[in-house]
Length: 285
Image (cartoon, rainbow, N blue to C red):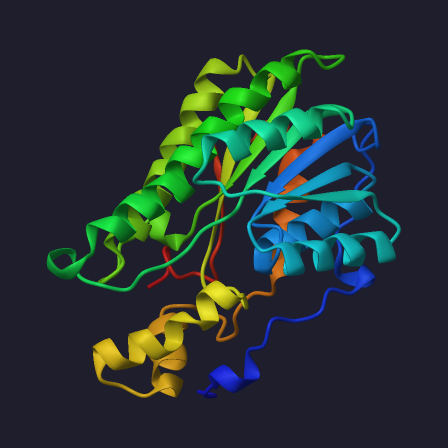
C-alpha cells in the first residue's frame, strides 16, 4: 500500500480538459447559478465549471481575495462570473446576495457548498463553534433556497435545481466530528424536503464524497494526528483513505462536475437523491 503524504496533496489547479461540458439548453447566460464557498476547494471548482458551461455564475464567500481569484480563473476559461463578498452567517448578506444575483438573470441553480470543520468530542465541543457550524452549514443552506425558489418558479418552465454538498458523513459518523456529521445528515433531509414540495420542477439533491483535496480536508490532518496520537502520514493513509478502495483523494473539479451533472437535463430523475462518489468507503468497508 502506498503512503500518501499530506505534502503531496496540494489543492490542484483546474484545467479546461478536466471540466465536464454538457449540452443543455438551460445552460445559458440568461440563467444564474449561485455557488457558496466559491473562494476555494469544491466551491471554487463548481463555480468555474458552471461558468465554463455558459451559466451566469455568482460566487459567494467571505474570503474576498480568493473569491476574486476564482472569478478571474472562471473568466480566463471564457465564462461569466461575479463574486459577491458574503458572510453566510448574516441574514442581510444572504438576502443581498440573492437580490444581486437576480439582477443578472433568472436564478435557476444553487450549489450550497460552504462549510467548516472542528475536530472534537461531544463532551469537549465548544457550543459557540456548534452554533457557528449550524448557522453556516444548515441555516444558510435553508435560507438561500427559501429566497431563491421563488425566482426558479418564475423561469420559463418553472424549474430549478439545488445541490447540497454532503459527505460520507451524511451516511456514516466518525469520531470527533459530531456537528459536521449532524449538518451533513441534515442536508440530505433538506434536499428531500425541498424535492417533496417541488412537484418534479424544483429538484434538490446531495453529493456525498470522501476526502477531497481542499483546504478544509488538508487542514484536518494535524488535528487528527494529535487527537489520535499518530503521524500525519498515518492519518491520510489509515484514517482518511483507510476505507476507500481508491487510495487517492478526489480533486475538487471531480466534485464540481457532479454538480454540473446534477443541474443538467440528464439528471431530471435526481429528485431528493444522493450522488455517492466515495471510492467505496460507505458500501464496501
